[in-house]
Image (cartoon, rainbow, N blue to C red; front, side, top):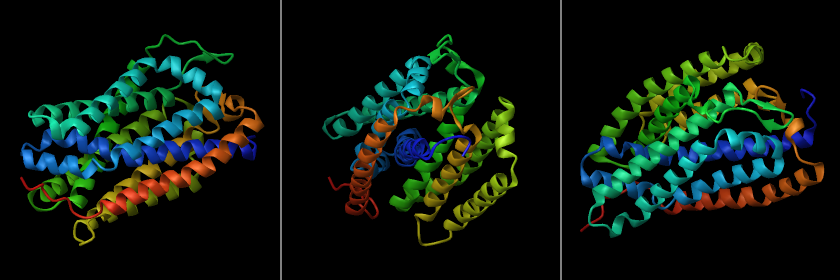
Length: 330
């Protein structure tokens, strides 16, 4: 497939799975954090925190797995991307630390509104940085002979900034759907209204990102112009959006969230098809960036062990803390 051997293709799939799982799980948590500013009642904010407190740290495991996988499986891509994204990555890590501090120490602070503000700021900054990184990757990172050759400011371009805005809207959409599922009463009704409005905003911005990206490289247009790609992707989005809106009429309150997550999966798949076989546009392919066959085999065996364990851990966390979140009794 595109001159890529099956071992390298499997390695790329393992890496893509890790990144996608992180986006689906921790993206929802980050969305809840950013929604703190849209809910002024202290009791509602406490319910929001309780809904993600038992699971947020397990969700971030996938970020570590993705970063480590990129370094080991595609070291040349890691060496090219990291210098281009030093600032967004450092800011993202600091923001995630701030978010962790706000979540874990909130219960022991007398000023819980301060912890909520830190949670909101950390979630917003981390999301923006992830959007900047995504936009920089899609627009292309200057490199020559395996070395980064840019200025270090490519992430400040208009396209990465627009991607950051789109990702903020997307994570907010996931967060609102999560709260609609896990809460009840006035908070659930408000979250439902927010989810519906954010769906429109997120899909509009997502369409803008797709349209803009097609102007960046003619190969992107060629990859997505095939009917067997554009047709199923478009149909899947229509079906998922229909399920999203109909989900609010159902007693199964998880349906809007699952539909929104499905849209994210389709969007992620379209992005992969758009740039493949490149791993760092405009010219670094997965084959050129891949490590040796023995290293890939070693890492894939590790993935085969770690991924099921991590998925089991995530699943156990969701099952143990399933159900509607009740405000704590004081």
